[in-house]
Length: 110
Image (cartoon, rainbow, N blue to C red; front, top):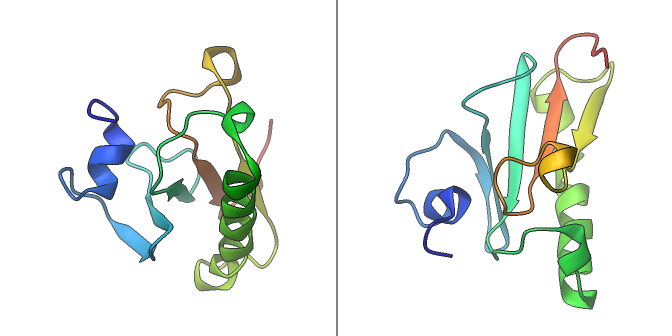
């Protein structure tokens, strides 16, 4: 999508501090972290919401969640972390490209 900031990050048009990437996803540090560790896990394919999932996209999100689990030790999150998918404006989604937040590094409140 031409005006999507995450699509521009995926394409390398906007710099990011990438932690991991493969042919399906990229993982990078959030530029406005809400915790000491705040990573964004972004599918390379553009789709905005969980309601946009078909079988292939659901499998992609599943694989993405599986990959997230490998980062917890690298970032010292053995005592716990939070995984968030915000949906729509009322759900706190600020970029209309499905992405998964990984937060931790301290006791997280609500």
